Image (cartoon, rainbow, N blue to C red):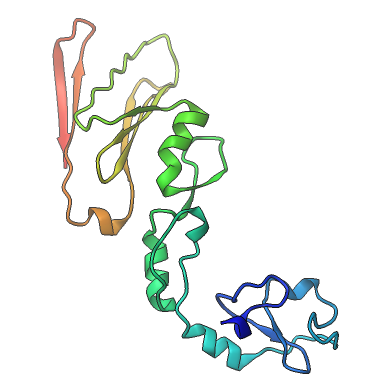
Length: 203
């Protein structure tokens, strides 16, 4: 493994291209643009690739790219690790709060929105969100999370200027986590005297 490390950043490249000097010393694609001479022998550097090193690294078990954010997944072959990284609970996603462009690990998105954007968070799956639709108020918005032992649900209710209300429910997680689960959402509509006027159930 030490022989496969880039001598500049001391990290084994995860993918090609991997470059080498005329003497065969390798370095990674991230460090390549900054180099004008080989960091080992000070020889000239061009764009010569080390194809054999690329082939070896392609067969080398590696850690999850999100290990620095808390993933402790065991090392896997590259193809297997790519499948894990697509649904890793520590993968980075764009913050779902409007106007925030931060990349946040999936596992931290609830706390990020709670602390930075003051979203409401409930740990009760059978939660109650009260939304008063005031005809004089325009574009009212309620954003909140409901956390279950396995997943987090995003509730997003909006009263639009045109007078209608939209309700969005999303799951924060991976397809692998929810394929064998079933969830039901119930929305009740009441008038100002708390008299039921309609309801909607969906699974």
